[in-house]
Image (cartoon, rainbow, N blue to C red):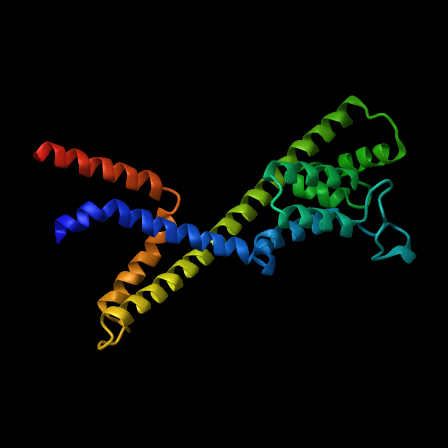
Length: 243
């Protein structure tokens, strides 16, 4: 019995890995139902915060939003980033697009927010924003400020997108694990009903085995093929040595 299990271990691992692959396939199938939204909330909140313009000095403009010159509306920025996230655009490209759109929206009104988020002096960045909006050439020190702003924005977006991507990956793995366990339990129930219909499936040995298979399916899925091949080779080698 033990020898049979050892000999079949490569096939067992391959089968468990196949279950994990099927579970990930189900996750892909349900992505339009909201799975591809996972992780974007933090990005949208941060982008909305740093691109929001502040009210100017006039009393009649308190709480008003000033639209920066030559910049697309804030809502369009978020919508563009959302579309790229939902469609699974390359992460590096998403960060580049986000940085370009945010820099386009830089103005006197949101300079303070962007300076706070990127660790730049607010007055210096506001001066840079004013000159960029009017098309005035930047002085050397102002070019340095803008370069440091660019680096700070790059670091900010890298942290945002890496964190969001990690959240997305974690939740999709959790969802895939739920699918794998459900499929394994259903398969175990079907097998139990055919082979041992007189005993209750609930909390039986068959159910325990099904749970173990379900839990192993996700971590084994990416390596199942290589692992089963390696084990098969090892078993065959040992058999040859014993002869």
